[in-house]
Length: 75
Image (cartoon, rainbow, N blue to C red; front, side, top):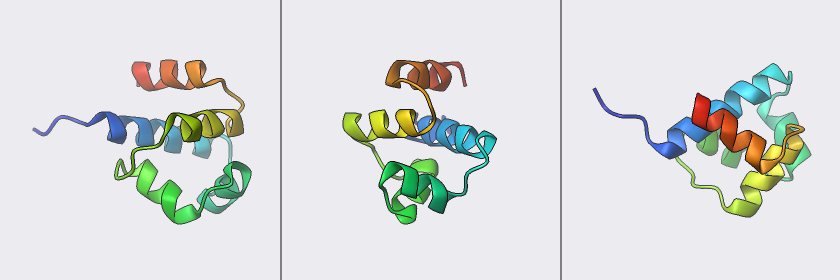
């Protein structure tokens, strides 16, 4: 069995939080200022976001970057 990468884990957690917030990728992208295609790649673990991008994502979810990473860690 292949181990989940950190990028995949981060993406899965972001997707789960986005869905819990009731946002589509397009709506979330508008909130973040990112293209939907980038968010799709990120949620599939195919993109490595910068620290700045992680902070934008966290804020768009109503979290701090520390809270977001705590959720990723626990997922």
